[in-house]
Amino acid sequence: MKKLDIKSPTTPFCIADFGCSTGPNAIIAMRNMVEAVELKYQSMQQGSCAQTLEFQIYFNDHADNDFNMLFKILPFSLPYFSAGVPGSFHNRLFPKGTLHLVHSNYSLQWLSKVPEEVQDKNSLAWNKGKTYCTWAKKEVREAYYSLFKNDWTSFLNARAEELVEGGLMAIQLPGVPNGAVPSQTGAGLLLELLGSCLDDMAKRGTISEEKVDSFNMPLYFPSTQDLERVIMMNNKFTIERMEFLSQPEKESFDPILKSLHMRAIVEGIITNNFGTKIVDELFDIFTKKLDEKGYIYKNELRTDVDLFVLLKRKLSGR
Image (cartoon, helix red, strand yellow):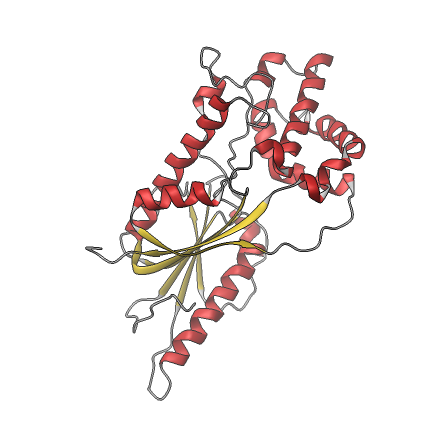
């Protein structure tokens, strides 16, 4: 919190978590942030009769997120007030100048939609038979990047309105090294493998080939160059820090656990496009293929990275 400017607040210190989902990760992150801000505030007020700093935490996700599940696991005694805020983080969600700190963890790699060009049979970017831009032609990758750039611009513009001057945004998301392409990443290879499972089901007649051709994942894993470019173009934030996060030791490969993990991430998108009936069969096939192709989890084939970005809202006139 060295980069955070804390003045004597006349209103609660407001923190928003964008993409909170339903699990404990958001709760842990908010607890850590509250503790860090509180420690800094107390250190700045030594020897004075400082007022108690109150916190308001906003948990944001799409309207169909199960906020009830999230709030059921909140600790009974909290050092902050809490509220759920449904809606897309690509849009404005809060009044102007009301947030002091923004957090987002593993959410901003999700796009607002699938790029329209990759679903258009008449477009050079039509992504026939694929679920992502793994092994795809240049036009497909460009369509994904273009939408990522537009989505991030919308996100930055919205947060620039909502944050106080000097407010911070701490963002973690999966990415790729500069110059890497999706076929060099574990995420890209896994999505390609999932697409091959859908192809198998189309060949069996379980789902239509046309349905598979029109299905693509609304995901983009950026490089630091991608992020720097869109942040600098926006010109409303300074980059205080951008770095790769250290990753824990790779656990032993278990195709069943890896399949369950993948299912937890993409099941909602699968059911929205294909219905619920195919899900069990799809991930049975996926588990078997993972068992056969476990080599995609070898470290030398996976160039995925976790990115951390700390942004600061510029002061007016700068």
